[in-house]
Image (tube, rainbow, N blue to C red; front, side):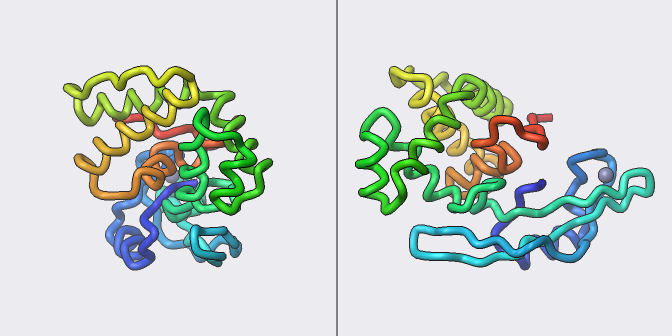
Length: 197
Ligand SMILES: [Zn+2]
């Protein structure tokens, strides 16, 4: 799994130019390799169908194939990351039922996302702060927000602002997806989160 731009033309250009590194061997670059299965994701405004591009490592000894998931998605989630992020922002501020009602989401779904984040909130905070300092060593440690989940959301917020500044503009939650290889809410992820070089 690799998180890429939501703009298919950008993805095609990057593949053609050999700009997409293989996350498995890291030495090779990916070439286009057909498309992955159809996904139906819920967005703020309705339903979106997408067939993510697939890439295959050009390195002879590797040849791994990877799904190139647009950065508006998270792995194995049926809502786009912007919707999930909006729900996570309500943690500690609003009950899950109420938040779900306001956002047009099933309350249980909001509760599940919060639980997933809570179960690894310290890891999430550490991961995003590590990225933040790798990109900007002078960045300040964000103020404590009073709970591990709120701290994690804050760490995501400050880190993704720095990432947009130094690595290119992307919505905060798209950066959150990119910096976790789509696995922000995966508890047992088979795809390790990318680490700064
Ligand atoms: Zn490879």
